[in-house]
Length: 399
Image 1: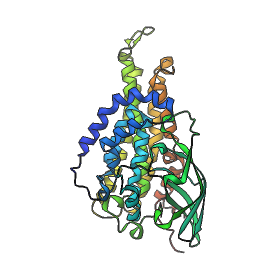
Image 2: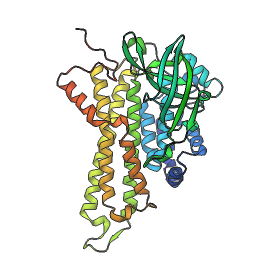
Image 3: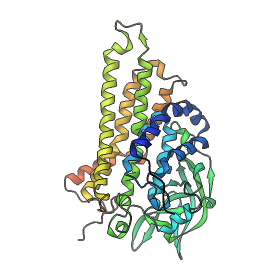
Image 4: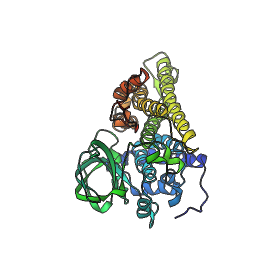
């Protein structure tokens, strides 16, 4: 299927996301209560073209710079973090399809090129090598947006191959798993990140790839966009949602403080309180710094991929590692302003407490593991060798 339509511009897509912020904010509480994003919201995102940003043009997608999706996510999360999280997860997987055998895209999108795919990469289930492919069995947790994923799910698993343990991603059909509603959590409750149960399902070899592989063998044949490291694209998208959540907290804080009067303080109007102003300024600077880093890292990687080149190892390490500090920085920024709301922010009818809880859970995501990644990055800068198992596709030097 070849696209013949006119592609929207980056500015148009970002504006569509900005225009949705008030609408999403109105729906955010209901999304949390329902513990999933409603179908009409997902349809609105489809109509806006958000899921096509990273989809290959071969199947009607836009095949754009990943920063287009990142900027869209930064806006959507200001309105409803859970809804933005679904766009992130479901919007990143068309990129992964671009890495696979073209039979996968044909099978997924030949009848409906808007079909979505969810995921659960943590290898909770088991994978067995069988003739012609693999057999998957067990439970895979936290599959965000799975109720909307008619195209199935990407599931992660460890497999022993050629004397080493490799981490693979497997595209599993929707008919091959059961969704179990076990998503009862303190934040991002509206993402519908439910459990998938698989009972001895066969996945042919062509529907799988080594997810961390990166080199001419794995990426030499793919279109330019897909020469970006998948792990980086995914991790940057998660960081972008968290940045949007923190920006949303700043929005809510300003809305709360502008009319507020501090009757027990000499300054009167809250907007004249030096600490209310100071915390806001500091928080805003932290969020802006995180934003600039994610966008700059992505543009730097795109400068290689858009020319058909692979991203150099040192650049990949720096990008992958530094983006993982986003969650901690944005949580600090959000908590900084939330604390200045005093008791008024803690009522359950305050959107600020929900935004704070959502940021907490987002910052706990594995892609925001700043402690371990700080050790890896620092060690690399000091000349230490990378561990044998690493997310960069780098092989240890021969002894």
